[in-house]
Amino acid sequence: MTRGELRELLAGSIADGMQKFFGYLLRFAFGLLMGWLLMAYLLGDLEYDTTDNGSNRSGLALYIDNKTGCHYLGTAHGGLTPRLDSKGEHLCTGQE
Image (cartoon, rainbow, N blue to C red; front, side, top):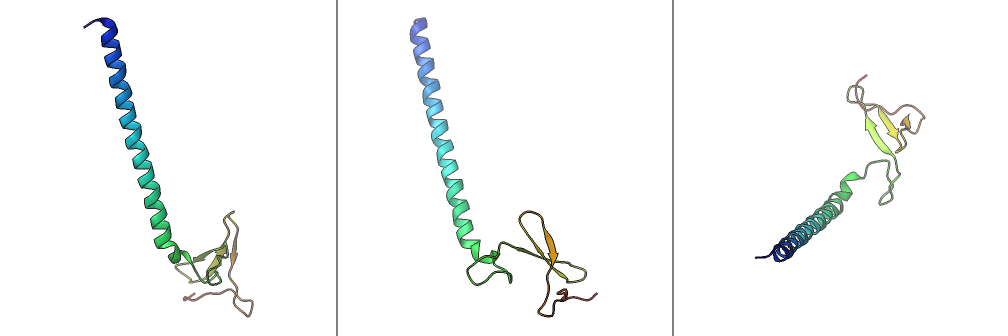
């Protein structure tokens, strides 16, 4: 086998290996994306809370203090405020 033939054989083997690798990588990435989308679809309803209005999300996160049971509303930007009841008082469902 000549040096040129060996080079061609080696280059072909590397190209075949890279093609297989990227094929597997693409299939894995596609499977991961489909799995993530399926989980988001199936578990999407679990993320609604009492700050949401039916199927419309409020954009707020509900936090409840484990010790006091007091409710707080948070935003995606890091804001946090006490949740108030209809009388304007801090909503607390636990023992203080």
